[in-house]
Structures are given as C-alpha cells and as structure tokens.
Image (cartoon, rainbow, N blue to C red; front, top):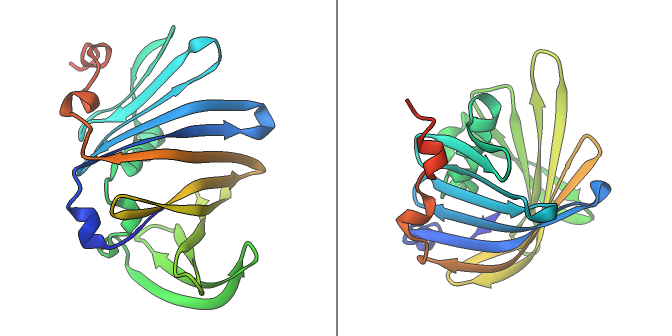
Length: 211
C-alpha cells in the first residue's frame, strides 16, 4: 500500500519498483519489476526458472501477456479485471467515489496490533475491510471475501516494513494469503518520474493480435 499525502502523490507521473515475488510453498522466487504511469498504464516483469521472462501489462485499453516460448495473449474476463486494478496509479489511495459507504466499524486487533477496522462497501457483494495501526496510523493490511455463484474465498493481505521513498512512505513487504497459499512481494528500490512512455506501450507481439 502507498501511504502518504494525497496531494504529494498526485504530482507524480510515474514509478518504477524493483523487488521479488515468491510463493514459498511452491519453491518459487523470482525478480520483480513494476512500471506504472499515471493514470492507468502498467507493466510487470518477472523471470522464472531457465530464464523464462513473463510480461503483463495494460495500456489504458488492452490487457496483455507475453511469455517466453509461449507468445502473446490478449487478456479478458477476470485476468483483464485484475490487471486493470493493478494499473490504477492511485488505486491504493482508495477513491471514495468508488464505494457506497465507508465507515470505521471496530476497535480491534490485526496480526497482533491494535487497529481501527474501516469498512469499504462497493456496489458489488464484495466488502473490503482495511486495518489501520492505532499507534502509527499506517495500514496493516486488509481482508476481502470474494463471492461468486459457486465459491466464497477470503483474501487476506498483510503490509509492513515501511520505508520512505521520495514523497511517499511505502510498505516494502506485502503478503497475501488465499486458500492456504501465501505469496510474498518484497520491495527493495523505488524511483519516480523516470519511466518513459515507450516502456509501457504495447509490445509488437501484442499489436499483431489486435484486429
């Protein structure tokens, strides 16, 4: 999560994040690079075993994926929706116009810390609960229950190890737990306003798939 002054964040045009992505139970750990350009252009790059590079992105219109040895795909449905959310440059600031109701609903604990529970109600059945450290005021994480006609899945996200990068304070450890599987993102480096437009444009392999 990005925690900071909204006005300070709004003056930024782009950010580049370097770190790692891991799934300990599967023995997966890979370098991670994220490029974001305001308001909604995005590329994420990971490198799997044997030098297999995986790229995914959104250019404001098309969500796409390119994998070494497999080729390019145009993404749709849930895959596209997930990338669109990740591409939102201001997504972690919680645009309150996207929710029907926002309220502090409990004095509780989250991962062993005293926290205020804030409920964000969307226009869908999914309700997001975010937890803020009562002492520091920083987000500790959130939980959301995703529902469909057949399944109900709780996703729990923990954030911590905050560091200051430029005008922002960021969580450099992000842990997500879903159905017993834990994924971990660790951030080591962030820079602002150095991403070029060319860095987030559609790759040629993707352009060839667009009618």
